Length: 486
Image (cartoon, rainbow, N blue to C red):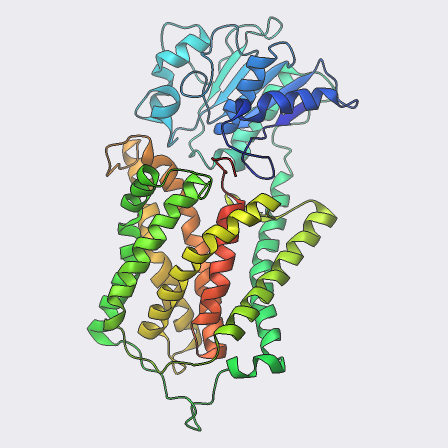
């Protein structure tokens, strides 16, 4: 049997813009059917979230070219698919989590746990009342079978859940023919997730190690940490007492408090264009600009530090070289094993040629943010006399704690009430923004590690800020949909 993972225009290495040409679904299915190794009478389609709309677009364009499908956290009907009926799509399994963030958008119900009450779902299943999870409606032989599964997870968890994926395997075993079906709990794919997680951690270690090794080269001698004892460099001072507490609270929570408003402003006023072609990247850009300006205004309250002169060029060169070494490692992993460095929704991916040009556009403002933010971070908290573990922990928490509270609070509210807290009038805004915020925690934690290590080796925030600017811009651009022609 053949199951086709959804691909989308404007995502990954597919040309943009996003949402065009049925999300790329019709072309993807046509290509699959063109392969000699594919049993053209036995094709299953599966898509998660927007990927569900991709396979639905393929099913609309070629209604007889597949046998069954699984929609993971997706929906038929508006806003992006044709209305579902008792006969279309063919043999559908819907996996829709009890703590789905997109229940209003997908099925018109405020709480995902109430999806069984959705009239839109009733039209798909041909019922006049609640749909019973786990019960097969219709007839597989006629292509009218439907089943609903509601695991107790969230939208981004659906594609990393053994339970949710087990439902998909079970459905394809029932609706497709070919080979001996394996037990649904016989899943080994998570080993790959663990492997690429180890690779992701190794990638961060490689960046740090590359920087440390390069720093020993004679050309970077001026960048190395001067000796405090011989008077070449004055001893560092940091905030203390109430000043330290205030600085920590402001550093940790202002970025989180400005997150939703900044994303709303970005989504409203910085639409994807030929110059700034990525919608979510534009929202992050607005957040970075706002927080950069706030941090710049607060800089005068941070303890003063002696400036390091004549290290800008060396800092830029060593940052570019360190990240280039990391990029080369990713290229080799892709070339040899066809993998990237990732775990769940956190992924460091290669850039296409067009994405590299987009990367150059966003690099300057994102790097400017890190230059300002990490300069103030080190002035407030970093001293060479501080215990190393405590310094790393302080800097990491100063960058991430607000987002930990934001994300943790939102999902606690979702668990307790069935829906996320929405501080803004647009009901469709908060779910995606909250899922994006999850990535801020590991990404800023990585920046905290890199920034602290490089500062301890150089006494300057600049090398680490430049590395973080390069890394984060690369990460965001390569992993975000391109929504405007570029």
